[in-house]
Image (cartoon, rainbow, N blue to C red; front, side, top):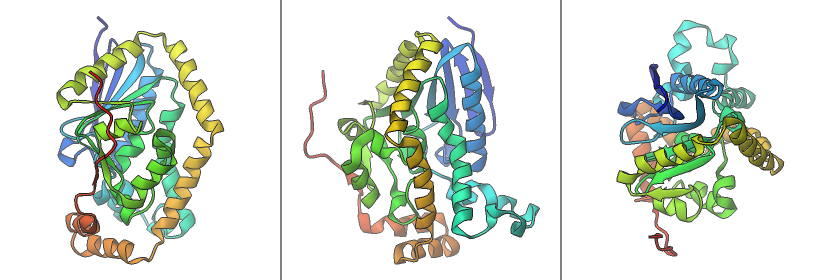
Length: 303
């Protein structure tokens, strides 16, 4: 058995054991929502894992009930609001209001997570509970996604807030399902996500930990250099299919969506300012009811 190496930061826990680097989002009280600090610490943890000789594979997970409930809207999409009193916002484009400033900010945020595609080591996501909005940005940047049957996956923010700034949906589930998910912002269960190849496989919630551990154990048994060749050649094929270019385009279109003056976008911003996040989300999602996709054409679970 390999030696265990552990470290925790404000928002992330990190452990290396038996050839596996385990990176865990550790804000369970916030459903592991992505704050600016979380994104920075995750970025550093990913670089650390890729650099360590005692890790061949990375397992990304969330502490508690959820994988990740999305971007922390109370953190002003990256904490700029918290920093506003420390400097003159007029001196920095990070607080300015043009579409190019918004694109610049989204690209800097994207820099922190798009590195997942460039790491030499494979990343497996273990998804339980909510995997929403920014949570899908993380999960779909991984090489393999495993989910609990009852996980809740989707991008409800597409209903009024914008388009995924790290949009890799097409490469996981194809054009029709990508459009179906984004046009409505509906969510899908882990088991149905597996049926449309959005995730590799889904398992009963009580089996997910075992199945994820077994997956990374098997992957981690292969030399890191060999794993890197496999990952990099497949990712090169994705790049030839436009993956990297599409990420830049997604950030630009998300910025354009932020300029929408339509009633739903305008109402969400008004609700956020006057009533707070909970009320804004309730009003945004009310017309969609349950908002859960349930497949009619089901394949039986393999015994």
